[in-house]
Every structure is written in structure tokens, then in C-alpha cells.
Amino acid sequence: MSIEARLDKLEAQHRNLDSEVHGLARVCAEIKNIALTNQHDIAGLKTDVAGIKSDASGVKSDLVALTQATHAGFKRADEQHNELVKEVRENQKENRERFDNFESRFDQFETRFDQFETRFDQFETRFDQLETRFDQLELLIRQSLPCN
Image (cartoon, rainbow, N blue to C red):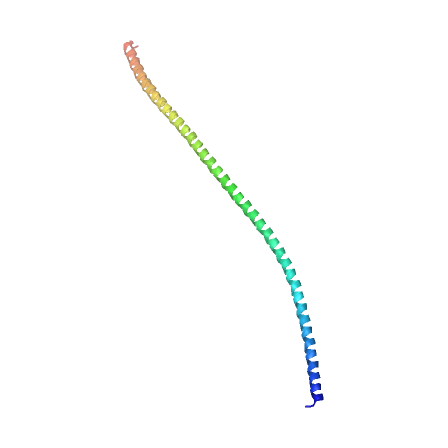
């Protein structure tokens, strides 16, 4: 092969190599643009993630506040329930004492009525005896009086 043919071949290879280098430079520029776009997107995502973390922090604090309020509500409801149970027990005790007092008073009244009934029975017996005696006296008086 002659020098000119080799030179032509070398120049063709140089042109091919030059076009390949330019293509490689274009690919590198595209890769750089993609990397910059990705960096920009990542920065945006980091901002979004920071916002989401902030929102999550707000939700967590709201949840903590809600949990504390719910716990306080349950605690107050338990206290009210315990107070109500205590009042009911006190009222039951007081009512039992009152009912026992009423029952005792009714027993006393019943005893007094029984005593009155006994006394009335005694009076009735005495009246019956007196009536019998009056009848006897009347009979005696009639017998002792002259008959007409």
C-alpha cells in the first residue's frame, strides 16, 4: 500500500475518530444534562420530603394531643363514675339507715297497736262482764220487785 492510500485511510480513521469523539462529547453533555435534571428533581424531592416530615411531625403532635385529651377524658369519666358510685353507695347506706329507722318505727307502731288491741280486748271482756253483771242485776231487781 502506498503512502497516499495509507494517508487517506489514516485521514478516514481520523475523521471517524473525530466524529466518534464529537458523538461521545454529545453523549457526555446529555448525561450531564440528565444528571443536572436529576439533581434538580432530587432537590425538589428533598423539599417535598422535608414538607412531608413537617406534616408528619404536625400529625404526630396532633395525635399526641388527641391521645392526651382522650386519656384525660377517660380519666375524668372514670373519676366521675367513681364519684357516682361513691354517692350511690353513700345514698344506699343512708337509705338503708332510713328504711331501717322506718322499719323500727313501724315495728314500734305495730307493737303499740298490738298493745291497744290487747287493751281493747280487755275492755271488751270487761264490758261483756259488766253487761253480764248488769243483766244479772236486772234479773235480780226484777225478781225482787213485786209483779203487777
